[in-house]
Image (cartoon, rainbow, N blue to C red):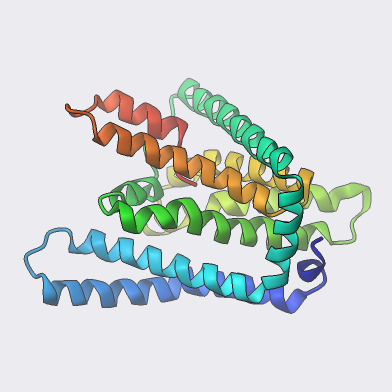
Length: 268
């Protein structure tokens, strides 16, 4: 079922390069252009920076999703065909994987508390929460765009790259899990670490690595890219729904309640 990616090294390299160029070069250029345009059009708007960031993220993920769908047309069709055939089974695996991740996340956070590590939101989490000021722009990116793009890159490409290495004693599978999980976690905190030089930013990436492991596990068990996409979408969707629901309360919700939701349901 993965033949289109398994044996196509040029396509794998293109997807990885395209992902990093879009996320770190195109995104910065778009942000500068959009922010400058908003300053000219609405010079007194204090939310120009946040709106520019939200639009940038939406456009970048839209560019990547449509490019991935075009480049991997047969890959997606094949996986979706098999996903429909075992729809309820695959949905069950995705939900089970999500609960497994929640369990891992609680255990990790308990260990961090026992070691007296001062927990806080990652810059990635804070940035995404800010984009929810524009829900019609941010929700498609959070719930659909990010799951499709990140699962194709970290599970469909990186996991399969390592898995197809000729190593003894199934070390290729172990390496595939390590790379797919750790790179997924690192990508969520690396920018903040580079900018701040604060090593605790890397520690905050551990829950993301746990999420990467759970997502990789459901992909490994099913060999279908739509299963981790659905699981990823569930996590981000629940996060969005919970925070938006709190925003509808007649009184401002207690900070402990907000912190608990972000503690249990960080955006992936």
